[in-house]
Image (cartoon, rainbow, N blue to C red; front, side, top):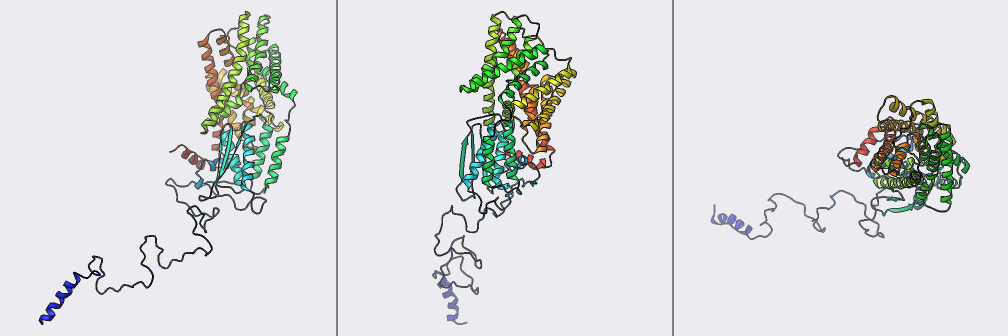
Length: 553
């Protein structure tokens, strides 16, 4: 080998030490052919589109758009499948022949991303109604339900059903004691539409409540095709309709309710008549106060005075009757059992703000009743009336009379709640069954009155829920009046009497017992309703899993 050839590799190695193209450790090895890019600039971004992938380019006239503008290929109806949660997505069976309450309640307890989409196609209108009008109709329906005493969860379920029936699937209703609101967001990249409505007037009319339930049932039926204008027309008819019972019937029902309650606690015919007259007089005074615009607190205060006054007058007249039974019967007609059950139900279902407001309302009504009765009891004690707070009411020897009185009490309570005539017979029988269960456990089995009341109220809730599902209606008309015989009238009276006679400790014990009985009624009714739902065909597994997520587990 020549000296020149020996120096050639050395010159190449020496040249590589100074050549900038091959000094990097990423230098291309010799012999590897790499396609050089032509006139295109070298791609440096990690988000570059791979070669061979065709991407639709925006039109020449369209702007670049913002991050909040919806993609051109996005569709809220045909959105891509989201990621599956770690716990899995439950299979929800929403058969159309099931009650809409359970179908909507199941979806409300699920996250928005996991709710099944509504059926394609609007009702009656080709392009679908305007979103603000649908939200307005939804709020008006929710207002009637909430003002009628319906639970917050059922009001939200009804509002969700109305929105969903018109294709608004991404909506979130919110119910409190005096405020209804609903928000609809067409997609994740569009601004939401929100509307609200304040509930200022409340009235007990279960006939109107049943009509609203029928309207929601028709709206949630995919085969009905009820237009928005037709829904508004039916809603206006509900507001214009008069109450099913005239004023004199309501006053008579109030008197008969008090008379039946006095028989339940051991009264005879004289006590029945006295309690009836006192309750009717108190009802007329309450109507007079309502016509003058006085708040309900003063209406309850005034209505509680006449029964107590008549009982004290009979005692001062030395008539051989049970004055305590007269006063207790008058209290039965005033105790706010409907608001109490609704408040406890809202608390058990997670609506704590609404539950607190309802229970606060019950407390104010109860304080009004306490004030009215205490005034009359104090006057009677000062006049020398011998009222014994420790006297026990004998109610153990007349089971047939008591069952008949409990049924009469439930019937008159149903009339006071303005129920439909078709539901009065069912709720009357339910009230008789409730008292039969209570009497068998309390007087025959000698079980605690709180436990007996809770079981009897559970039977009321169970039967009421089954009757409501059979008729696709609200459960309130079948349960509220039926718990009338179980209300703690005697415990309330003896507690107030002890306080009026300066026996505060004994009075507080009796008042606490009355509160425990009231809570047992409310919890029993709610538990009976939940037990009945467990055996419905909608499938409890899906609903319980959805409910479990709301507790944060």
